Image (cartoon, rainbow, N blue to C red; front, side):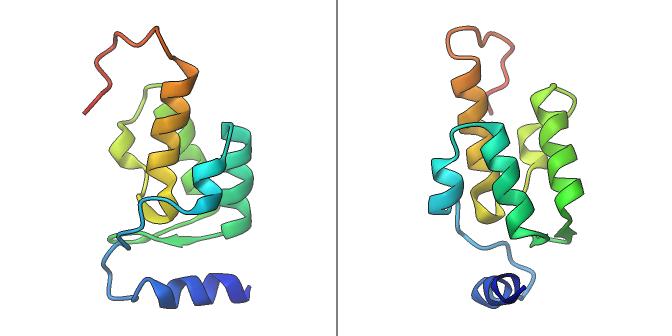
Length: 102
């Protein structure tokens, strides 16, 4: 998994979350299914205070989609939070009255 290592090096490895709010791939995900495929390919990502396994990322996103967790539970690494926010807005365009915006 050379990609994983080089991505870790790019982010500095000092515990700081990369200021990358998106990557072209996550930016172009047209559905949660596509986003999940991207997450599975990317593998474990380094967040602000911990590493996030694929299983953890997918279950967190599912919980956010179902309204059990806040959007900010999703790591900003790799643009995952931005992608989830965008896909959720696209999915409930016109019927968002629950005050989920931060």
